[in-house]
Image (cartoon, rainbow, N blue to C red; front, side, top):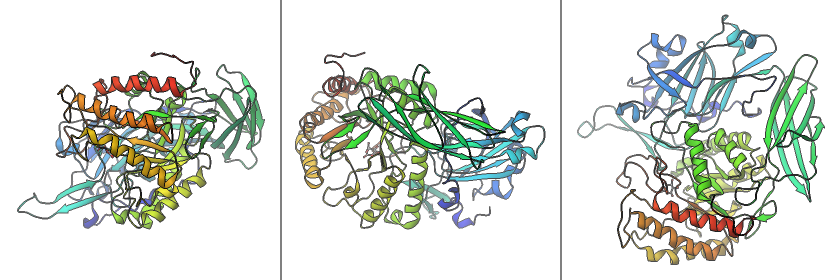
Length: 635
Ligand code: GCB
């Protein structure tokens, strides 16, 4: 574990954490054969403030209780640690922090025939995990889950004691996703001694810590490891082809049943792969496109041997996705994205999963009449994806490929890590009906020479992982020079006319936006989504005529964009996603006022004037483009 002083903020290479490719990553669910113990709540915590951030490893803090090696504070999980205390050194901390939690495991869990798995929903960004002082896993990258079997370790420690220690390092390098650089500044005339900063190229605060639930769960020793479901339909027959992988048993007898919402079994099959046929299938439809959106069946997968049996229930929706030159088809009907970009971001908890916030946000989406969102700029919590499935909110699922601006981040090490992250993302989210497209990056330097090979490889790889969904990345490059665009299925463009370009000049929008669309469509003949547009508002600022940062100005930007969208959506524009759903925290810069204020809701989720404008529009669009009876009204 020794780290040399010159690399002291930097952890091992990205490849270290990817030992789990061949396995599944099913969301833990209780069943007659599986139990769960959530480890949310208070953990012990200490940031390693030593000069090289390496004291925790040198003194092996994982070997005994964290409180024995130094002072600890309470730290809630899930949450970012940054905003929990009043200490600016913790808010802006760079390096290793240590979490610890002790838990008692029921004796039945350590019996023969049971697997106990420790699962971390996400940790930013590099983690090392010990149980009772024994290292059980390492993982590179935030936003995605990782897990390890720990039953052997528990068996060595009678009495059920289980001390979990997790060291988390938030540093970003040119090879991580997102990328970043650690800069050491050695200038005693201008900076304090040992001065280190983390530089990034993305516009959100670099929150860190254990952001999602940590849990222990059990399965039988032979268990359902992964399920893949592909769906289609013909007339009124729904077809689900499934593949189940069972580990730990040579010849498992797999039984699969499909139950409708009322719990009635509508199809069944045996064998590790097969096709389920459902007559009079209820398709999965987006919110506001159908009277009964987000219809989910429950796919019960079980296998039984002479000794063990395992049962797992996976929610599945039946739907198809297809892209033409001018349209995005869901269940063979044109779908128009009227939605938002979001962040996992809120006061105090930062990027930590928060149930009240999550439900509030879905209620706001529905109030707004939004039928979709993009997981800008990283995969969101699985709990959020499940909500999207159930409420019929369509998702463009983005990986953490944000801020790829340095040419050194297009090298082999970066690419192979990026491919591995797509493996993890597709493995986690492949069965979500709400996910209709993968986004492999946001605003990379796509005009640089190596970008062509990089994105060609990345998108081909993603398609090989999932041949059923279109793939894209979000661009802000020049249409003629963008080297990734040839490989996308849908062009997704961000632009901020009258904001970053021609600030204050609303009158340029109709011209520049029209030209943007004509250029991209003219070159590629692919459908286009306006994947970001917007303007900052400090809530409560008003002027007439509208000036930048006022509520009136944001409304005028939106209105001007909408006029062009309304013309172009008759041709090839297939969606509009506002930047942003809510205000969010960023690094401190001269262009940010305690964070990015482009939300149509404040960070506390109060609407600005733009929210009401968008609400009228989205409901009107739903009436025009959905399949609801004409005249369907606000809720
Ligand atoms: C963008 C980025 C987004 C920023 C936004 C802005 O193009 O994709 O991350 O927050 O612009 O407000 O500048």
